[in-house]
Image 1 (cartoon, rainbow, N blue to C red):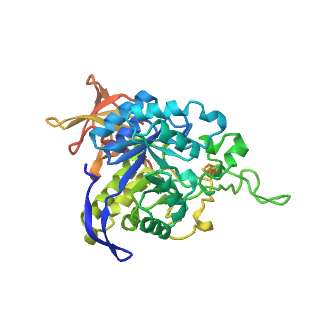
Image 2: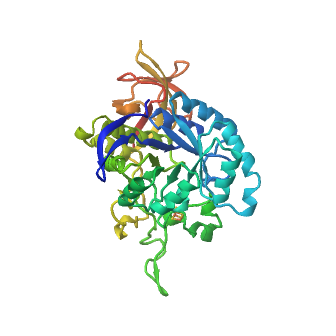
Image 3: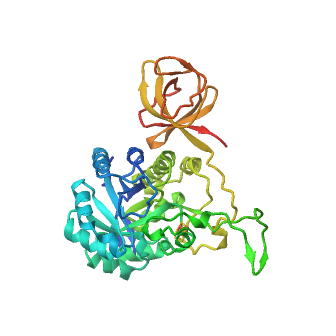
Length: 419
Ligand code: SF4
């Protein structure tokens, strides 16, 4: 995988500029997800450690897992970042310098920090770690970006509320890397400024505990009168998800350095599919910007792993009322992750897969791999590893052999249609 392609000839505010290939940055909620994100084309992944991150419910990494993740990513030329983006109470800061030194020793390339105390400790205690300013700082103007550059930070993760025009202006005025969320869930409040979760559950959003209260089902009341009877006309305060697959050229032309996908709690299938789609779009545009065309299969690929309504967030306009999700019922994704390919025998055309959700002969499945490889087939006869015929693959992690219609590779995924 190469990440250094540049093209001559782009014009930005009248200046001839080299157009740099942006980094594709994926979430990895576990070591296994890290491997899939990198294998499907991420240039970098961001993870959470056992402390100081904002996803206290994700399967956060031990130092040993971090070392394994860094080693795996390095084989693909990819980097690993660690989120340390809580706003710290005094008690949270005890031990932070030691923790950051351990990250440095584990080969982590950068931390993503919001609290200036953590930023400062990192720069002094672990100077080999890059410090990227977290989106939690809500940076939306070039003066703030310049401030953080002067503080010595090489990268700012912009607020999701930043517009495309603001990004262009930042790139034109300040020489610094800009990381931008391009896909995934949005906060219905200004990101990082919400206390719904704190109020309802005593779980602090700014210390990693958000329980997504905005997506709960609520009854609607007006004054003393209930507008919806309990259980009727329930509504949520959740926002539509961000999706910029149709606007990859705009983001690259604006000078975005890192395309960030949200979702450390999301499944392997989701991470692989979304990374796969953006990887292809970015590569296609960088290879031949003049003849670039959005391909419907990239859009479809994203829709196969998740089914929330999508929009373009704040890039082009301030989202209005129609950008919220009011219906309480969310539709499931049309495909479910069924198995991971662990081996393939070219001579016999038999693949070995590891079960992740039940499947049986006669079921239509789809195999996918990096670079957009995919094909459909019906599951035929299948056996366990000892050669015993199976009528259903019902045991999680069981290894199963089945004939495949086309060659597959380890870490390809098998998914089944459910809707
Ligand atoms: S409750 Fe919703 S809006 Fe509030 S922080 Fe959590 S995800 Fe964001």
